[in-house]
Length: 133
Image (cartoon, rainbow, N blue to C red; front, top):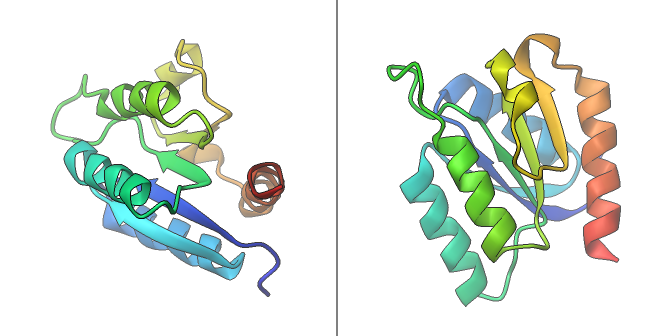
């Protein structure tokens, strides 16, 4: 059932999580753009600005390269989005428990191991109402 609409950027290096999030968001009536890393996400963000079609929400994984244990590219991207795209709601979705202590201003932090579909949908609906008013 499609109950909301919006434009959502999903930045996740794992295809299975990209697919899961994409399906959940599309079921909420969202248009979804997916990126596997910072460079691709940056191009999509810039493209949305050029087309005057801003993203409502960005869902970011903190670690965008699982081969690098201390990789925090998602946090760097969150910082860029907060600075240059203030209207975008930022959701950090991660398996990295240390993210709980992150100091970047995000709208929601969710751990993958505790992922709850209904809560996720509720947050997305709420954020879409806030950003499309």
